[in-house]
Each structure stands twice: as C-alpha cells, then as structure tokens.
Amino acid sequence: MFLRDNPTQQQALGFLIAQTTYIEPQVYRLKYPELNYAELIPVDSAANEWAKSITFFSVDMIGVADWFNAAASDIPLADIARAKHEAGIEMAAVGYRYNLEELGQAMMLPNTNLTVERAAAARRAYEEFVHNAAMYGDSRKNWLGITNTTLVSVLTAAQTWAYRVAQSPSQAPNILQDVNGLLTNIWQSSLTVEMADTLLLPLSALTLLASQQLPNTTMTLLQFIQANNLYTLETGRALTIRAVRGLDSAGASGNGRCIAYTKDPECIKLHVPMPHRFYPVWQRGPFVFDVPGIFRMAGLEIRRPGSMRFLDGVC
Image (spheres, rainbow, N blue to C red):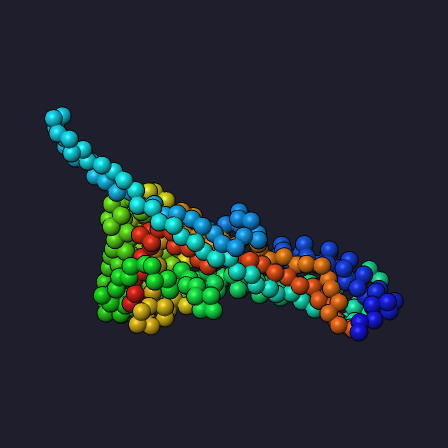
C-alpha cells in the first residue's frame, strides 16, 4: 500500500513534477552527432502517432514509344505496375526514476534543480534505439536496416582498397573506378532515372581515402573521388560520403560493404509517428517515482530498391 497521504511523499511528488518542466526542454535540445540516422535517412513523423501501420504504394512505369504508321492499329501503350506495401508501427519505451531519498536531499537546497543526466540518458537510449533499428534492423521485429537489407542488388569489388594501395600507390586512383562503377550501375540499370547521391563507407575505408595522398599531388584520394565521381560530374553537386559503424563486416562474406543510394523520401524512409516523449510522473512504489517515456516507429522502408546498391569486398 502506497502512503499517498504522507506529506513528505506529496511534497516530493510535487517537487519532481515541477522539475520535469525544467529538465525536459533541456533534454530535447541535446544533440548526438554520432547517432546520425536522421542525416542519412529521411525521417517522417507525419502519420497519426497512434496509427497501427503505414501503407504506401510503389509504382513502376512500363512502356516504350516507337515509330507508328497512320494505317496501323497496334499503338504502343504505356502502363504502370503498382504494388501495395504495409509497414507495421511498434511501440517502445524508456524513462527514468528517482526515489524519495534523492528528492528529499534535492529539496534541502533552495533554488536547486535536479540534474538532467537521467532524463538525458533516457533520451539517448531512445536515439540509440532508433539509430540501430534504422542502420542495422531489429531481429525481434524481423526488421532489416540500411546496412543489411535484402532488397538491394550486391556487387563485388575485385580487390580490397587497402590491397590496391599497398600494391602500388599509383593504383590508388583506380578506387574511383569502383565508386563510379557502383554509381553507374544504378544509373544505367534504371535507364538514367535513378542517381545515387550518398555513399556510406566502412570506417577503415574512409580513413584510407582521407589519408592516402595521390602521387605527385597534394590531393588525397578522398578529395579526388569527391571531385571526379559520376554524381558530381553529372549534377554539379557534391556526393555525400560518410562512414558508418558496422560496415567493415557487413558484407555477405563478413567483409567490408559500401552503400550507394539516393537520399530521397520517395526512395528510402523511416517512419517515426511518435518521437520520444515523457509522460507525467507517477508513484511506482512507496518511495519510488517514475517518469515514463514512450515512442512509436516502423521499420526502415526501401521504397525504390533500384536506387540503391551494395559493393562488398572494399575492405
């Protein structure tokens, strides 16, 4: 039985309720640059936060124009192939806790606020959860992430990039052939409809590119690729190149995997209808006070698999 009429408990509960109005705005202003899923994947929170699922349709256009005689009747026709997809939305939770002793000691000092560490730990746990689900999936929900989705075609590098550099520094620029081959494969296979604008690399691969200087120049291999890749040459815009933890062993044989894709919500999307939120304080036990938090999300959607490719064996 909780002693809810105890003045000390009521005072502690009132104190904690007031403190949450101070703590939570600070927590939601915190940024975690290393948890960069939202920079790499479009995040959509437009759906109703209590929706059970997200339904979307993918459309593939079919048809080729051809020469035609006015007396003929066999007009070439265009059509569309439409497929319905549904992604279930799941709920997860993380909050934080104080006990009566901690609150009583905090109340001893006038004009003293509780620290934000516990609330910040809950917020970071949420960010880590969503980041991991987006990047690596979650087997408990049969979700796959951007690094291991099975919807994407896989290419294989002839040699690792480190091997090419070790064999001869003059061969280092040939790594650009791998990058452009990956981008070209997407572009040509889609009849120039898809053009990847983002390249995700293993940590070791990006380190190699950033530190390897081209012979007889002051340019690194990374700078060379940034200046001469197909996407930049075709569009005049910079190719986004980022390192992602886990790609060093994400390949089908446990080797390094490079990912090229179009960062466009029509191609790839992560639904988070209800971002993390804290709910009102409640007394869990005689001397324990919880601040619960919940959020709701769906698994990663690869809406146009043709806009993405894997290149295994880069390291």
